[in-house]
Image (cartoon, rainbow, N blue to C red; front, side, top):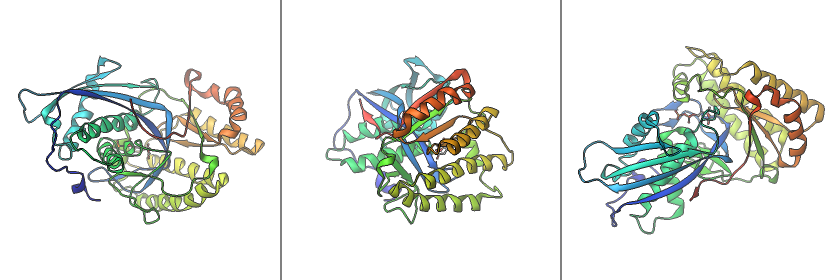
Length: 360
Ligand code: DP6
C-alpha cells in the first residue's frame, strides 16, 4: 500500500456531533526504532511487545463548526483538566493527518485523555496517547465509510498514529508488532505496523514486563531529538545493519522459544540504543547509576539462578525486566528483595504482553 491508499474518497455519510473513546496500550521495543527518515519513516525496522496495563484512554467529543477556518479547533484535557502543554504536539499531528482525514477542520474537538500510569512516572505516553487519538479519529472516519473492513481500519489507525509518534504505530494491535520494511517479514511497511506474521512460541504468551522506575522525572532528551542525532552519526550504518541482523535472528528465537537467544538480542539492542546516544554530537548518558545497579543485579541473578530474566531500556533510565510468566514467583521475590531498592520511591509497574487497543 502507498500513502495515497489512505486518502479517502468523498464521504457518503456526513458526521454529526458525537463522541468516541478508545484505550490504547504502550509497547516495548525488542529491536529498537532509533533514527528516522523524512515523513516519520523509520531508518530501520523494529519489533515490539504490546503491553497491557500501561495504557492511555482518550475520548474525543466532536461537533460541526459553524464557521470553518483554515486552522484546527480543539481543546485538550488531561484527566478532565485543561492541559495546554499538549497543544503543540496535537497541532502538529492534526497538520500531518489532515490530508488523510479531510474532515478534521470541519469539527471542534474536545480531547480528554488519561493514563493508567502516573503522568510523572518517566513512562512515555506518546505511543499509547497518539495511538488512542489516532484510533478515535480513524473510527470517526469509519462511520462515514460504511463497509470499511477491520484490516484496513487497523492499518489506517497505525498509519495515522505513526504521524503522531513513530512508536505509536506499534500500539494498535498485539501481541507482537513489526514496523518497517524488511525483506524477511511478509507484508511489512514503513507506513504502518503489522501484527508479527510468524510463529510465536507459547513461552512468550503471557510474558511479563516489570518496569522499574529509576527516574520518574521528565526525559532528559526527547526521542524526537534523539532520532535526529542519528543523522550523520559515525556509527549509523552499522547500527541499522545490526537492527536488521537482530530482526532476522529473532524470527527463529520467537518460533523456538530460545530464551538465551532472546536475551542476547534484546539486551544488545537496549545497550546499542544507549551507545548511540553516548557517541552522538551532542552526546548524552541517559542511564543513571541505579540503572547500572539494576542491570548488574539482573546479570548476577541470572547467573546464579539460571532463570531466563533479561532487560531492555527505552531512551531513559528506567529498566524493563522481561521474563516468562512461569517464573513470576521467583522474579517477584528478586524484585522485592533486591531491585526495589534502586527504584525511585520504591516504585515499579507490573505489566505483561497484551493484545492491542480496545474501543470503550
Ligand atoms: C527508544 O516514537 O518516541 O522508544 O517518532 O519522534 O515520536 P518519535 O519517537 P518515539 O521513539 C521511540 C524510540 C524508542 C525505541 C522504540 O520504541 O522503538
